[in-house]
Length: 112
Image (cartoon, rainbow, N blue to C red; front, side, top):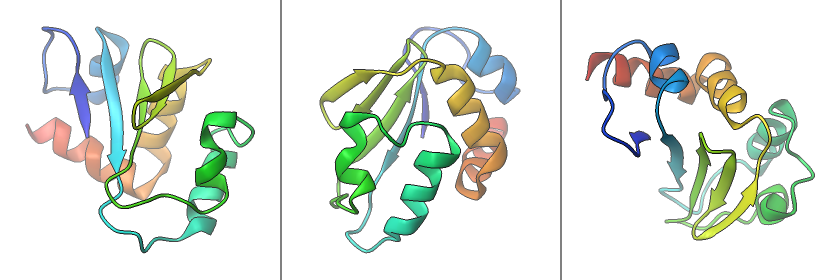
C-alpha cells in the first residue's frame, strides 16, 4: 500500500507522487506462509541486507500481520520499530519499478 502522510494528491503518476510530499510504502504479511528466499533476495536487491532492524526478515521470520514499511522521510519500519534508511525514496521507486508486486501497487495507485 502506498499512503500519503500529508494533504497532497493520492492518485496520478507514481513518479510525481513519490517525488512530492510525505508518503509511506507498506507491505503487510497476510500469511505466515511465504518464501524467505524471496525476501532475502529483495533485501539484497535494494541494498539493505545488513540493516539490524531487518534481521528477523533476513532469517525468515515474518509473522502474519507484521508490516514492513519505507517512508519518504528516510525511515524503514517493521511494525512500530523504526531505523534510518538512507535513500528511502530511491528504494521505494526501485521496488515499484523492478518488483512484480511493486508493479501491481504502482498500477493500482495510477488508477485510483
